[in-house]
Amino acid sequence: TTCVYQETADLVCDLMVNHYGNPSAMHQKGVEAEQYIRTAQETLAKILKVKEKEIFFTSGGTESDNWALVGTAMANKRTGNHIITSAIEHPAVSAPLAFLEEQGFRITRLPVNKEGLVDVNELEEAITPETILVSIMYVNNEIGAVEPIGEIGRRIKAKNPKTYFHVDAIQAFGKYRIYPKKLGIDLLSVSGHKIHAPKGTGFLYIRDKVKIKPIIYGGGQQKGMRSGTENVPGVAALGEAATEIYENFDEKIERMYALKEHFVEEVTKMEGVTVNGCTGRDSAPQIVSVSVDGVRSEVMLHTLEEKQIYVSAGSACSSNKPSVSSTLKSIGLPKELLDSTIRFSFCVNTTMEEIDYAIAAMREAVPRLRRYRRKG
Image (cartoon, rainbow, N blue to C red; front, top):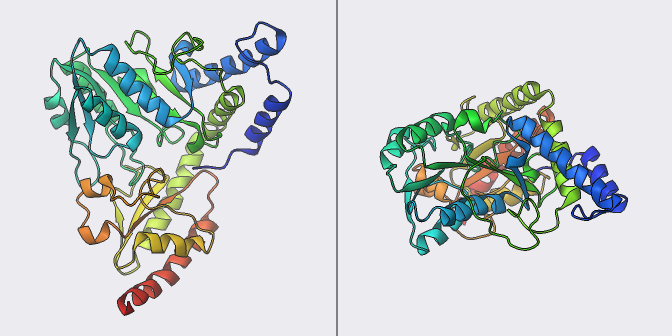
């Protein structure tokens, strides 16, 4: 997650206190509120090079994913009942697909290689006339694998032009320039709290003409597609944060890669410490998955926490549950490392001093924790 930009937080406060109108109301306060939503819509549409009417605001990535999958499946079930996904999707994708499986849809879960990448040829072979949807994440949230989205989009449309392509871009938006039309993407999920916007904000891009049903019914807001009074402060903040994250974009990403490369180089010098998946420019700039042989991930997490270094064990959304990461199992991580892996995450505000501080903390903690475990 990320802290909210100060300017964005100030905007949220101002909207909550001074421009609090309901955007559906016809009076001046309502019109003012609606304009903030339109501005955010324009901003995001411009970043993605899509139409404003194709942007729908949600409560975050989980809702966007659920709507893309359940809404599309229900709207197209007369066309077919087959959906393709990968074995390493976030629970926001894998859980609604499990629900759809219970409803009678057939789900193909593609394996990945040790770097977390799907085989594009295998994906193409899995597409049939019954395939209504393919859902593949852009960036894996645990190991930073970057899927070949453009090639997947091309293969899908060549094999079955009627098959929709959904991309969970929650870890990719703000880290990559994403143009859905160019990549063959029909539905794209984005979450605000990964790009310095407030938690509980996000949007779903739905290409014009995609057949999809709402999953939230009510007053018919957002053209009847997503009912409920819009979160005006959150929506405005999301647009503001997106503008900020894409300013001087290349410099920001280059700097993040420099931080990651330095971190990976130093941390892998430690005995029994390995990094999972790709680690170069072919991986995401903000995620590093580190396995520490002989030290349980929970122990390492709390040891670093004492030094105000906050990492996660697997996906932060499920790190409070006693379950083994499906991503780590899918890439063939040795059994003894499944419970010895932590994830470091960076953002545009991360400094080299912070990276060096984390490395020093690891150097001190790893041998000490290993000795403690052996004695136990």
